[in-house]
Image 1 (tube, helix red, strand yellow):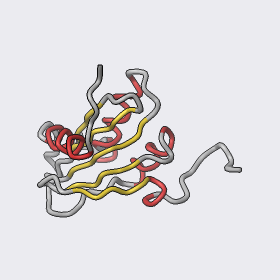
Image 2 (cartoon, rainbow, N blue to C red; image 1 turned 180 degrees about the vertical axis):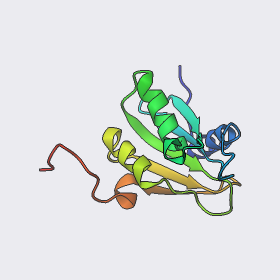
Image 3 (cartoon, rainbow, N blue to C red; image 1 turned 135 degrees about the vertical axis):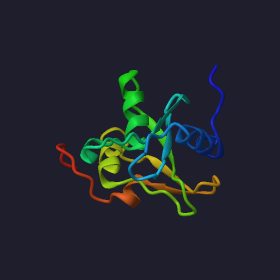
Image 4 (cartoon, one colour; image 1 turned 45 degrees about the horizontal axis):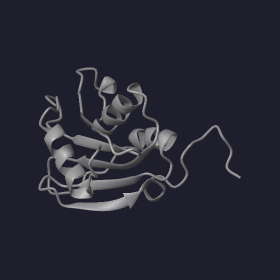
Length: 134
């Protein structure tokens, strides 16, 4: 049986994932953890490349890792950066989130684990979709 995951625990898992970040160019290490609808957690970190456009954000790594394992429903995603500010996902990550979880809760956290809860519609109010809304 899968144990329930609290918001604080999800943030802690994102903090742990941040330790694996590969960020030699920006020095900006990010970790993320996504919670599936059935209570599983997938983590990711940012992975930079010298051809900077090929860099992948932590949020997308976590989400796509889960998708590649067959999961398509998500409830909450935590993202943690290296500083005192609450780390916000970039537009590309928000759009990927919208593909799988249009009402996702997003926990934006600082390096100490303090976090705020927001929703995807708050951060990306008019996400692109090929399916028209009613």
